[in-house]
Image (cartoon, rainbow, N blue to C red; front, side):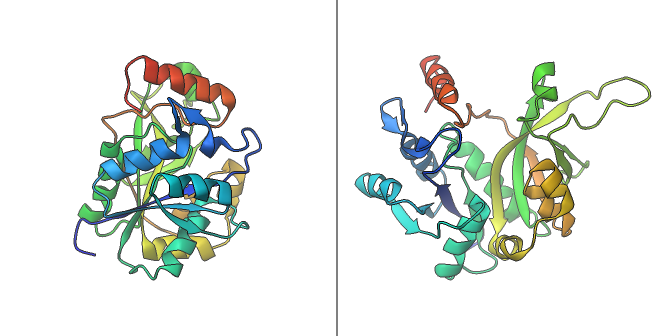
Length: 252
């Protein structure tokens, strides 16, 4: 691949404890996975692949013309599923691949381009991701909303479900808390290394896979996204919120 080029892989599974079959749930008249695919195709990606272990998802994706990679049903994470695609297709270790979650139908094409560009402009980085400012105190304390802190150069220092930085002796809060937006760009070499590296204690404690990358010494670049994504879909209630989000005039 030439400089600046990247691929997108959309990991999508049918099984979900809170919302089985959510990848095929209808949002604004289209299956959710179609929304994700359309946004990825609107980005600068040279290739978009849907990676799944379920024939129902594959069949729907085939109907709207998507490239599909059938993957193992034993994967514990989207990272593992994308790594299988990269290995099976022999992608170069220096190539860049963006993980766009199959339950993020309202992610923007601009955000996909932005996270990929972080790796093309920072040779030392193995991964890249995005963040946005958090203002609502309820969001700051919500363990379902992951927070990130990073240094002055934009390198991630830590991710947590707890408010970080903690307000300690002074009781004075920081000027801003940062919400981690769950989109990643990887160099294929880092992706493959992560897939074969056991989880670490921090990852298991926080239930955050990106901490494995930090634990192994990988550099993760973080950029502030100008475009906030709509809600991810983890429950049927989230689907209702996404419909409302679209009805209020935000694009799907």
